[in-house]
Every structure is written in C-alpha cells, then in structure tokens.
Image: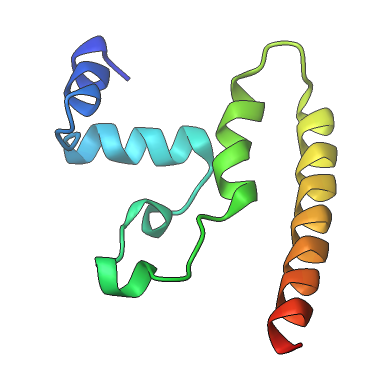
Length: 92
C-alpha cells in the first residue's frame, strides 16, 4: 500500500478499489469484514476479537506463520469460551 493510501485512510477517507483489494489480500481477510453495519444493527454486537487481532499478529516480524496460526487458534478458542459464558449469564 502506498503512503498516500494510508494517509487517506488515516483521514477517514476510503481507499481506492485497488488499494482495498491489496489490503484485504495482504490481511487474508474477506472484504465483507470491513463493512460496517448501521447503528441500529450494532446495539449488542461486538467486533470479532480474532478478526481484530490477526492483522496485528501478521504485522509482527518475530512470529512465523506457524506461530500466527497457533495464536489464532488459541485466541479463537478463548473467544468462544468467553462467548459461551456470556450467553449462559444472559440466560440466568
């Protein structure tokens, strides 16, 4: 990604299609992960923890792809456990 694209995004402007495609490819995330819902749809919804952390993990130079995959699995398992506990507390 070019410095101008990063600058545009830092100023709350959308990247062009090519830069957006490059970004989603580099992050290995589907484009739909970047869509935002309307405020009425976000009442109880939290951003996906794994989706937020994976780009940070991939940016680290001290982690191998195997390390990143392992950490993704551990974080996803923990997030599922926390969600299950949260769902159980809501039912009580």
